[in-house]
Length: 185
Image (tube, rainbow, N blue to C red):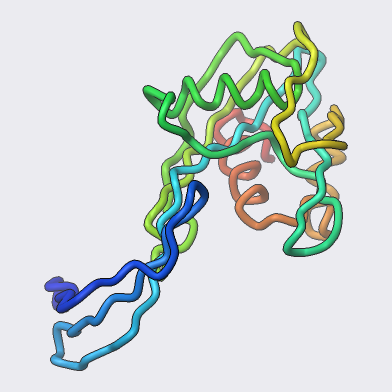
């Protein structure tokens, strides 16, 4: 098996703003095949938080997702920005901003690539236990209408296959974190 990767002959930026960077690469595979353009999306790293409350419920948020044109039930999360020194601080901030909850215990569960074929960013999944509501939500622009829901863990697990959580990365974060927490049979 070859591990040489591809050679980028040329790269040009197609679009760059605060949310993403789209570039078109002119590539040569290790087998000598030229692929051009090969589009690459660069985003900041993302955070997912699987937060379990002190009364043993999973914290979820319901918010509108424009690309799909509907509301989704999700776990709290967001993107890292320039002010974030590390992913755990970003996770703590996102949980508090979106839900008003803080958690006593934090554990990094995994750092994975959401889509390494076309995305450069990583997804950091945290397990936060002992979560209690201490503050009011501090929602950012675009998060209007976001509501907080604390559901029994068994109810969330039972609903996963039926689409209770419609975002695949959130489903994987939930399963990974609950496995580490000893909540999967």
